Image (cartoon, rainbow, N blue to C red; front, top):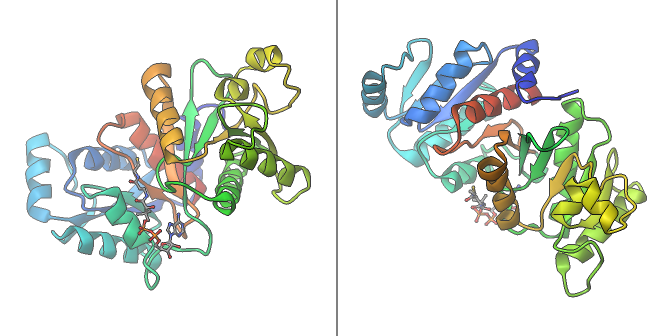
Length: 298
Ligand code: COD
């Protein structure tokens, strides 16, 4: 059972050591994360990117990348394609974003011939250790699917539930967020939340308990749920939050980090291999935990 994010390092180390490929590796913060992960025996790495820039960054910041294979490819799209192919050809196990845009990397991932499609929807899963909450809480999807339709939400929940179970969180409690806890026909999020909950009741979405619509406070606070007289095993005890769209989830993600001092680990799941999409704004710890999460679930 995962009780804190640092448990991910041990989980990762228990597996055969994974090889990570860093696409467009001319990115100091990503390089530091990969070096840190390698030092912590979480992964080995291959760097794909502009060798001149990588050498400049390493000599300025005193970074030692001598343990890694380095493939020179200065063009962003080609570096993304080359890195993705290393994973689809099983020469690497984890893909990580370096100095290129998220959409450039994801387009390569979605390439129909040599991408990392698995037949499932790809989605973003983030885990948080929030000091004010009594257990690890997950959130989906704050970085990939912009405005998932109903079928998309079903797939996003299934993806997340699969991986939470792999991480030792059996039968996760899923709260489908809306602004209200009663069904309002004018609010699509509330209608879809209710239908998702009913699908879980009927076994159409298995291995989890879903309730919704739940406003954010009802999902994470049993006091708030009691005040609203919500009788639910999920309310106040959610393992997973799913929002209506990327904007909602991204705001929840950032408020966990900035207002609630949360620790975080996040990956794209549903592809044939995990994808790490950390950004420069993420802490060193978040980057290391995200790499460990990718290695642990692979
Ligand atoms: N899973 C599987 N296949 C997908 C997915 C997915 N999540 N999304 C698109 N596809 C497939 C489609 O079925 C189609 O075959 C092909 O990919 C192209 O689909 P489009 O035209 O809808 O996709 P794109 O290329 O316009 O956009 C896909 C992106 C992932 C690039 C886009 O959704 C995106 O930009 N997402 C937000 C990324 C982002 O900016 N995140 C940062 C926030 S922190």
